[in-house]
Length: 175
Length: 218
Image (tube, rainbow over all chains, first blue to last red; front, side, top):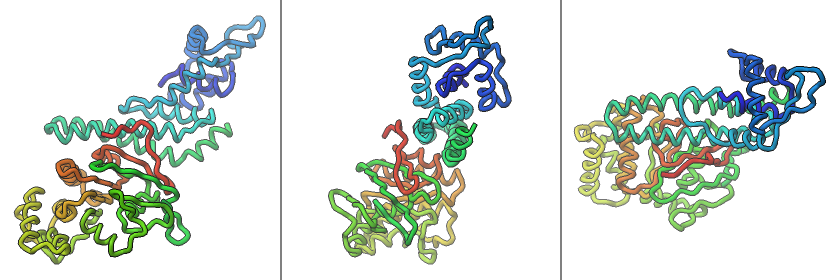
């Protein structure tokens, strides 16, 4: 799960103070693991250093929590590239994909397209593993099956999420 | 292509091209139109609007007699439940399409025997298909579909009624034979593990075909 990219995505939706970013991150992506304040500000500092965000509207006499952070064009490009690129097809990518879907909906982009792209990457990996099964020995087949079953579970999640996009869009945009 | 059943639209502008020798999976949720798409491509249904072309010949608009002839000579079919004639033996079922195509009885049963051997069913030729296991019956159905050396094999959930291992065995045979013979395969499935046997997969959603953007044809 990429905290920097997720925070960038939230900032693309609207400029925010660190406190509000943490609140939004925890609400959508940090259910079982809220983001420590220290990590929020350290990440924002690195993003600012790299030119992906700028700190604006600092209130006089205040510490870092009073600055409002704004995403730059470089930051926007990075978010777009991250959303568009499929994640390597391996187990336990649901949290990353979930973040991408929610952010895509927040930013008015086509979550369906990202899900389709990810489905394509998964199917390609499943084809590779299936060929290993067909041409390899029993051990190869067992190992390939392990990967195939995990990928199949991810695809089922992608299908169910795809079917729920309308309801998820309404929920995300209402919050 | 557009196709409705009464007031219910099944295909709403579905477009698909399949190259000779390709193995393509058509995926999608229940009710998406994937089986209707297969049936239109195979000339079983005529689209209400749109065109179907096969080998430079337009299929829709052909009379039923000509489409039936095409289905008997150029197309093979495997369905989820085989649709074999249970009172006939495995060999009889496999020979049947050849006999219907006016092939001599001797030649038809010789070909049937060859396919029984090729699909690991040598000892079962005389058995009635109603007495076979699911996997054995589906292999007979596959042999029956391929015995006429079709250019295209249409398979609609061919392993849907089989357990995982048996399904994999049938798919291995289907894909293996198709690759050896250069047969084009159009395979409808809701199962990603089945689709992974194809070189390319397309999604059908609400009667339209979409394709994952980074699918690479093999």
